[in-house]
Image 1 (cartoon, rainbow, N blue to C red):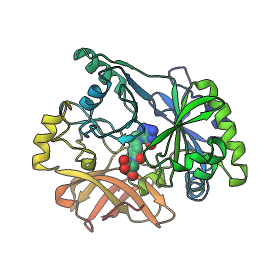
Image 2: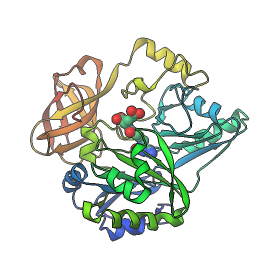
Image 3: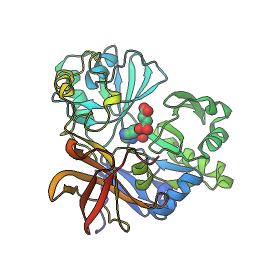
Image 4: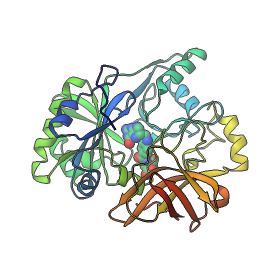
Length: 367
Ligand code: THG
């Protein structure tokens, strides 16, 4: 593929200077912003992520901030996950659905206070939907995109590196919780979360001016830990079953089809806009669902369109993400597979970018 032309519409991040200095080799576009995808090679980055610690520019995980007396009510209108027991200091992975129960996004909701929330969004223009609802319902809430840029620290040595920069107390932050930690005199939200299964933290940098100081502080403090610039890794996220909105699911899919039923409490999520639609479809159960799929043969090419999944020549699903896994010695993939063929062990054919391959539905994701 040719290069993408830079312009102001394709937003840089507060960490872009550091990413470039680290020798980024490829980007994707996410929420109209640059997201690195490769530093050395996808496989070399993968190995290093699993053995050391990486700093990721995930500023493209933009925040939709809700502020005001109706913030909590608005947040519950957006998701079928019951938020009544959620406390300030917690993060929840929440499906966001439209009036048909279709997925609009799969963000992390961050509850800062009863009247202040961040929705840390995946790649769709959720701000417009949220503003529309706030206006249409005449809610007493401000909705906007603040100057907040997440920086992730991921990998087995992440806690050690974070303790050096933010102090020993970061070790006490539990999974999907956050605390406030000072950097250069400014309090920042630091959560134990991130788009990998290797463990780690996300720093929600408020104020882009501190971007490079924070980046440099982490790089210097982790020199002996072999800290490197990294990014969400395709192989590792497929092994871990971490979904990618727009790739693995769209607004045509319900949370149940995406395997996100465990994050839905549709009966008790009173006020959720898609509730009635989801109650109707949940009664029947989904007719297709996300499955881990192993694809036989040598490394598959990049999956940049849905690959048809066939059984005896008939289409029974699609593959949306695929990569060669060095650790598991097979191609790992994420598919949306019809009920008739989604049982573990079912043999399928996949029309990959370079021809037909045998594939098998797996019992679970690899990590
Ligand atoms: N962190 C933050 N914002 C984000 C992402 C993130 N926004 C975009 C994108 N990633 C949203 N999608 C996901 C998908 C998976 C997870 C988080 C965000 C995730 N899932 C865990 C899992 O499935 O194992 C844990 C879910 C849970 O148990 O609650 O972490 O990464 N800030």
